Structure formats: structure tokens, C-alpha cells
Image (cartoon, rainbow, N blue to C red; front, side):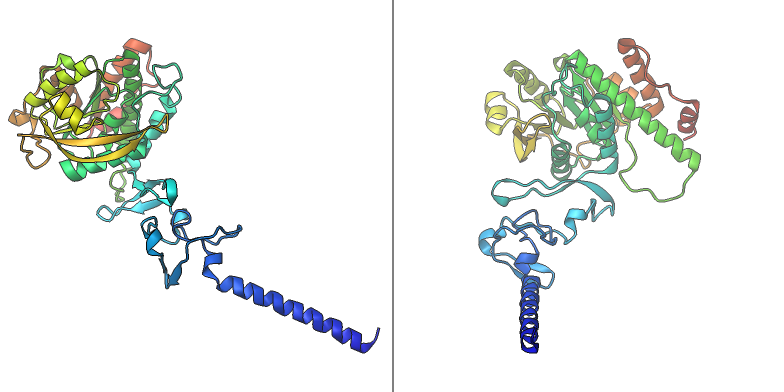
Length: 399
């Protein structure tokens, strides 16, 4: 081979390498090829190693993305490492709470992530472990009326914001089922008295089984805390709350909703005659707020509740893709006292006889409450799965 032909081949190879390097540099410098658009997925900024879809034209300025006005409403600002973030920081509490994943909606819109406190996560894990796969009336079907944990947290957040739901509020769940809402508010915001009533006996017993396991976890947690005598600062919201009790029976056995400040019911499927009875009970009680899933026309015009709408939000079910609008109402004519119209039992809060015994038991502490709940479960279903240990009982008594 001649020298001239060798030089020609080397020149072609060098030209090919130069063209390849130029193409790589062009790809690296193009932000729309290296990163997904914020409106393209869920707002996360990550290298796009797959063939990119055609995104809206964007401009990168520093660390921010400027999206055209036509897609600005679909974009949600999130940190660059959002997809790898395990929690969100509550600005007031400084707690790193676990997050329900952001859900993508049609046309690229997204739902804001919902922060769920650690103790609420623990309680839902306990419920899932013991009764999560049973469902319905114990026949394997999904129980009707169960919201997702994120939807329930969203409703509770609105109650806290608009109704002052707090640790001196009293909450009743009419038709409590497996007791998820009742146990949820006992954790966050940690109400003074959480009460659930259920007319279906099997569902009531499933709820009592869940309550028993949650109380055992609370007692075990307290025993461990006393044994280690730790002085470390705890994350607020990490302690499992226990001020919750369930009852089997018909809500119409009561004459009013006293002493409760918040009346909650997943009322989809409840018969009209029950609404008429409950409207009489609610109107004569001191309960300041009603939370349900029927609109103002039905609740006010058809059933006669003396209420006015405060706010509303869509919610989603666990066993299906059903969406039901949740409504929060204010009792007209009842002026809430600071702390959600809450007054201590010592100062004579009105209380219907149907609820008085449960309130007294709930105020005795976690150990006595666990004894009562375990006794009820044992009467129906035999021996409880685990006895309360002496160390756990001593730990609680030493408080």
C-alpha cells in the first residue's frame, strides 16, 4: 500500500471521529434532549436515557424551568431530586414525613403529594397485616366505604385547617367498619375522644381486632420507651395514639350527637330514613361540624340538616377507582369555642347516655382500654392472640 493511500485513510478516520464528537457535544448541550420537560412527566429532573418524547418547548434559566403559558398550569414545581425523595419536611413541625406518591391525572395534570405522619403509617400497616386481606363481611371482598390513606389524610387536613380539629376535639364515625378513620384521627391530630359505631357485627369485630392490635403496639412502644429511658428528642407525630373506642349498635339509639364536636360518616349507600333521623339528632346537639359525602342540596333541602358548606374535595376508594366528593359543613347557630367547641368533661359537657360509658373507658388510659377491648374480642372470637406482658403493664403504671 502506498503512503498516499495510507494518509487518505487516516484523514477519513479523523473526519469521522470529529463528526462523532460534534454530534455528542450537540446532544449534551441540548437541554430538551438531556432532561424531560417538567410538564412531560411528574416534574422530576432526571437524565433521559430513553428515546425522548416531543416535549413542550422549555427554557432553562439557572435551576428553574420556564414553561410556556399553555402548559404552565400543568407544571408543578418540585426539587430536582424529587423522584428520590422519601419524605417531605413539614415547615412548622420540622418532621420528615413519608409521602403518598404523586398521582398523574389525565392531560398531564398531577396531584400534590400528601404527607402522612409516621404513627398513621404504622397504624395502617398494623391494619393491613391483620385484616387487610379479609375485606367486606369477612368473605374476601373489599369493604365498601374505605378511602385510601391519602384521601383520608386530605380530609383530615381540611378539618384541621377549616374546623380546628385538634387534640381537644371529639370525633364520631357513624358506620366505622374496620375503624380506619377513627384510628387515623386518634393519631393525627390526636383527638381527645375518637368513637366509632358499627351496625354490622362482623365488621365491628374486625374493627375491634384492629383496635386491639393498635393498642398493643401503643403499650409495647411505651414499655420500650420507659426501658431505654432515652433522652433523645422524638419526631413529633411518631407516638401511637390510643384514645379510640368502638361500639356495636344502631346510631339511632342515641338522642343526639353530644359530646362530639365532629360528626363523620361515609354516608354513600345509607337509607333516606336514617338521614332524617340523624338530622334530628344533629340539629339538637352541640356538634359543630358534619363531614359526609352528600352535597348541600341533598343534606339541607332533602334531609333538613341545619348546616352550611365550608369546603369540599374529591376522595378515592381503596377497593375501586371510585371518586366521591367529600363535604365539610358547619352547624348553623352553633358558635365553635376555640379548640373546636371542646369543653372538658369536668365542666359538664353534654353527653348522650349512649356514649357516656365509652367516653369514661377511653379516658382510663391505654392499659385499661386494652383490657376492655381484648375482653370483648375474647368473648366473640376466643383467646386473644397475645397477652399483655407484665413489663408493659408496669411501664404504663409507672407513668
